[in-house]
Amino acid sequence: MGDLPDEVDVVVVGAGAAGCVLAARLSEEAGCRVLLLEAGSTTGLEPEARTPGAAMRLWTGPTSWGDTSVPQPALGGRRVTLPQGRGLGGGSSINGMAWFHGYPADYDAWQAGGAHGWAWKDVRPVFRAIEHNDLGDAEWHGFDGPMRVSRVRDASALALSFVAAGAEIGLPVVEDFNGADREGIGLLQANINDGTRHSVVDGYLLPAAGRPNLTIRAKALVTSIVVESGRATAVQCVDAQGVRRRVVARRSIVVAAGAIRTPQLLMLSGIGMPSHLRKLGIDVVHDLPAVGADLQDHPLATTVWPVVDGSPLWSTTSDADARAYQLLRRGPLASFTQATAKLRTREDLPGPNIQLTLALTALDSNRRAYPEPALTCSVSLLTPTSRGEVRLASADPTDAPLVDPGYLRARADREDLLEGLRLARRLFQGPALKAATGGQALDPPAWDEESLGTFIRDRGGSEWHPVGTCRMGTDSAAVVDSTTMEVNGVLGLHIADASVMPAIPRANTHAPTIMIAERAAQLIREAGAR
Image 1 (cartoon, rainbow, N blue to C red):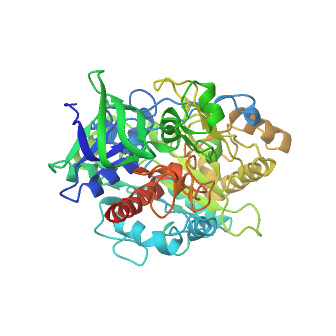
Image 2: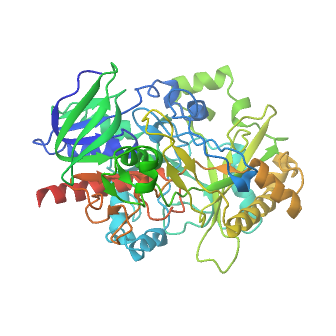
Image 3: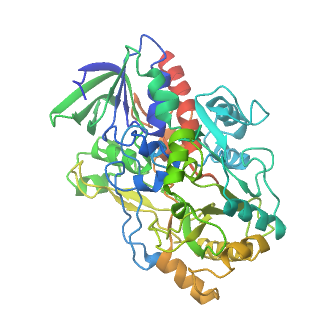
């Protein structure tokens, strides 16, 4: 919270999953002075916040921006909660910690769509370099990277019943969702180390924090980027004391504020669609209409099942369980999401398009808890075709932007999600799960097509994986040049976070975002050396 320097070589905006990686990697060059600015505070790093089983307590309050969507027509005009991490670590400090790379075809599609240098062959070595995986140095994993990744510890009887039920109905059991065979059902991996959340703060930022050329400042809201003669030269911000400051960046500015606030910052700086900016009284600095467009997310519908044999997480956190966690980092508090399934709704699809995720507590689609002992199976669409956008609500940087994900706008998305619900019901009819839950859901209460359509409309929500609002590529419509991570038409301004994804991967977006930041750091260094 100290003073801000007047001038540095590189300013990194946002200390989330990408920003922490970028600050750590770019400051490895001893002669490069790096300033990392974070709008939030260090809240979220306390012991309780690092307890995996306490993850859902972090989704509201000071650790989250508290975003909601604009009303969604396909969801009955409801607003959907979209909490994004605020504070050191960003989403890495508040998410469910699930660790998925995605599918090789996801990244090959990026390459085919114009994001040159981002095919599977390019990103696979980066994923391996990131990991310190308890599976060891196998073909698919690294063993000495900065991010700790582990298999489920103390898997619950209900999670094991989930996997067993899948096997009973003929689903392949997956040993490693980041390995050779990624379709089927199984226990998942998470960024958890010895029963404790392992965020990018642990893996990247803290090891780098002692470097004399790295300055980290929290509670510093960047309000605009200064562009002079086609080059980004400085950031305007409000520091922890509420004082307006200007910091010059001699080499570059790297924006890593996420898929919602990265386009917001660009538009506040006059970079975006001219008609939108002028309407709000913002001077147009650079005409780049795609800023804020192509918003994508994984929509979901959450089914809830009673527990008649076994105990869900929140009914097992007794004093004994708390002591087991405090002393040994064991028991139900040492993990959060334990099991998942990646499935396809039609045999003719090239790969899975639905993810079923078991949570050992009963949450509706907005992650609100049910009072009775129950568990949740969320049904997520991995391959949405619907697109949305982020726009400014006003020229005031403290006003939340308008977020329109366009959930289920495409009819095919609604149909696929409905089929995903049917897959969940089929799974819960497997003998192992039927014995644990009785086989009859609390929500939805009826499974005919009309009832399921109403259920999706009234209860549908989001996996909180927004991406794509500053798409990278090599075409003229792309926001970011995929070979340098520089904003097209603005020298010295780079973007490296989930906003640059050309298409959403079939994965929780935490690991892919870290991969983007790692690869981007190298590209930015190379661009600076030329």
